[in-house]
Image (cartoon, rainbow, N blue to C red; front, side, top):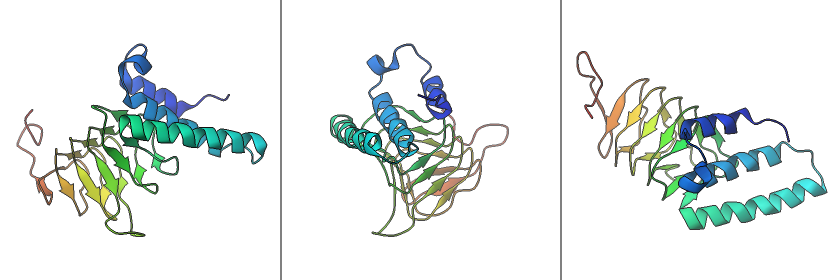
Amino acid sequence: MARDADWEADLKRYGMRRPFLKEQSIWAVWVYRWGRRIDRRPAGFIRRIYTAAYWLAFRFVETAFGISIPKSASIGPGLRIWHFGNIFLHSDAVVGANCTLRHGVTIGNRHEGGPVPVVGDDVEFGAYAQIYGGVHIGNGCRIGGMAVVLSDVPDGATAVGAPARIVPAKAGGAALSD
């Protein structure tokens, strides 16, 4: 099968030998990337067989690990999931390159049929961050743990709280101290 640069970027972000034995989240990322590769295959019997196998694998990962990343979502290369579990992405969500998700992250719409978030590159989501509706999260943002983002977040900003608010950057350093 052809080389998958997105999958290779994902593996690089995990930065370890044998991640399939050490990180449950890598299974969800792999199933997502596999589903995307299946959709690029020509229509026919083999594609239908692979699609049926994908749905079994997707449901297994969703149930066993609590991570739901539908193949219809658009996710850039270098996805990293820390602390797996309770991660749900809407099927129409757009997530940029080199983003990091932690447990409990939800990226979805506010009501059925409503718009979904668009997330830029290099965005980090804290545990249980919730992003809802047609919001845009800029490049290089940090979304704090348990933040509920309901409005746009500009490039490089840090958003915290429920509902989320932008935290001003401190002079000479990062927006939040670790």
